[in-house]
Amino acid sequence: MNNNLEALRELMRNKGVDAVIIPGTDPHQSEYVSDYWKLRDWVSGFTGSNGTAVVTLNKAGLWTDSRYFLQAGIELEGSGFELHKEQIAGELTIEQWLAQQMHEDDTLAVDGRLFSLMEANRLEQFCGENGFLFATDFYPADEVWEDRPERPMAPAFVHDVEYAGEDVESKLTRTMEQVELMGADSILITALDEIAWLLNLRGSDVEFTPVAIAFFYLSDKDRVIFIDEAKVTGEVRDHLKQYNVRIKAYDDVEKFLEKRNVNNTIMLDPNKVSDTLGQALMCGKVYGASPVAALKAIKNEVQIDGFRHAMERDGAALVRLFMWIEQNAAGGSINELDVWERGKMERAKSDLYRGDSFEMIAGYREHGAIVHYTASPESASTLQGEGLLLVDSGAQYLDGTTDITRTVTLGNPTEQEKHDFTLVLKGHLALSRAKFPVGTTGVQLDAFARMPLWQEGMTFLHGTGHGLGHFLGCHEGPHSIRTNLNPVALEAGMVTSNEPGLYKAGEYGIRTENILLVVEGAKTEDFGDFLEFETLTLFPYDSRLIDLSMLTPEEVKQINDYHAMVLARLTPYLNEQEQAWLAEKCKKI
Image 1 (cartoon, rainbow, N blue to C red):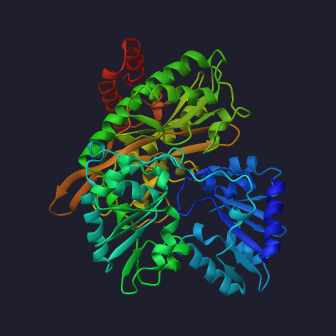
Image 2: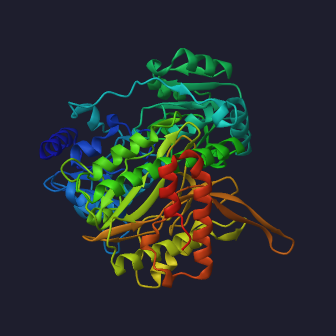
């Protein structure tokens, strides 16, 4: 890592750059990116999905959130980078740190293709306030990354309306209606999942997320996708032609935008469109949140039905996985990596399976306390006949995406483990049975999941709930359930995770996660309409870890009702032995 860092610094010296910020994203502001854009990983060694590297001529830092504190501490060792913890009292932000390291007239540089308009504008203001210069034309990946991977060229494919539930013309029409309401006549869409949803296209350019790298321009007169020709199969070409979508080269997008008529008004999402592309436009601009994100978040009936069936097949695969874990753990013959491989094998028995939705987290004992732990051949712990195992996993199916976490005991649970597990479970149950008026936001519901932990002076630092794509990204917005203020209200048809947790470094981690569907609830004359949740995920909680003395009668009934539903829905997918195992796990408590 030191060699890579020094190569970057040599380029900085040659270009007159005093500090550079390297995000972990791509020109589409993606959470997960292809290897082609992983310059941050190359220079620092950190591989988490969220993190930003900052390099000066004599110091380097890596900023990430609580999910990656332990992982980053391990991966950054000996790299020349110092770990900085985001959203922790007393920790310096990137700007505060730079203000200490830089001097007047020093230059802060970034690759403007990797920074949104909003981020670039914020950094420019920061530089102006501190007497620094700001440049957006610094491209270190193009100049010093000698063994840089190729840009992905795998073919895209059509996501059939049988699964999508809505054709492309309808989606384009609905999008343009929202664009025109904003006073614009066109829109540039850069988010890969939005393009995939809008055009009913999928791809394999990003690991775990079935998207194709592209840009999309939509107006009342023109529809253009910018995509590498190698990705366009005959099927994809015919599909796009059917909806009058023109095809241009991926790298031609900037030149295309420069030629837009000055009388046009284009809508841009300043949090998603890169500074480079935004600055290329000389026409009128309207800034606002992409309407595609909001449209995509509301699942149609075909998608919802697909989710339900995907959860059934996924639950059956998990029954076989956890049976196998129980049969083999005590013998010391399997490790954390084996759990992931077995999980993939069981899920792949479905014809609709198209891979995992993220890298499985199989954390045994102390590894479970690393929120986004990834086992490697060097780190993978061998399972034994005792201790806690946290398994967070998910899959991509043509008819839906899954994401589930279960924490189980491999034997001899301690009273403290049972106590902590039950605290987490109580918060999970409270959120899943919540009923709330239309217009409620996620931050208003977040405390439901945290209160049992708060009452004992404990908490978790990650969000409680994220949206879930339909055969798309495992994490999607615009809604969320977390302590951070997000003004987007929950609406019927949205899906969200429900995943409180508790992490004790060096001991164990506990997380319980289901996917919930927002559905219509009570309708009242005096207080308006209400919403509630339908639980989509189907797999039992580990009753061996439940301290019954901590539960209310309502919570006991809620668990028993859920287990009865799990048993009824999964039984048709299982053989006799598997049915018996599940029946035992779903026994009334």
